[in-house]
Length: 101
Image (tube, rainbow, N blue to C red):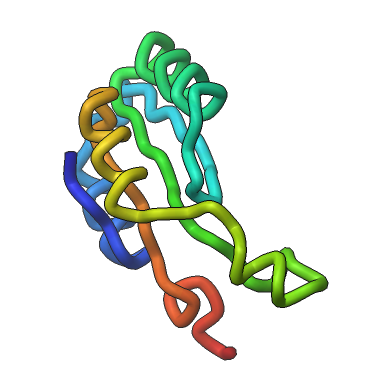
């Protein structure tokens, strides 16, 4: 599994994937569980290439305490996705997703 950190990195990789290949995408905020993994498996079964994002978006939380207590652990999530056979993990940081702040 290759970990990608920026949209530009993904664009470069995507341009090298044959146009007849189907690419599936599963967006997540991390804190992966069996529900996520069933979506990952469906993605892998229905596509040639699987991409999963793990991005804990702080703009989605009205209460900052919810963000602080969100059950995400990137190392655990990454290990689960690698074991599940994901091809690419898109794991941007805030500045990659919101370059203008």
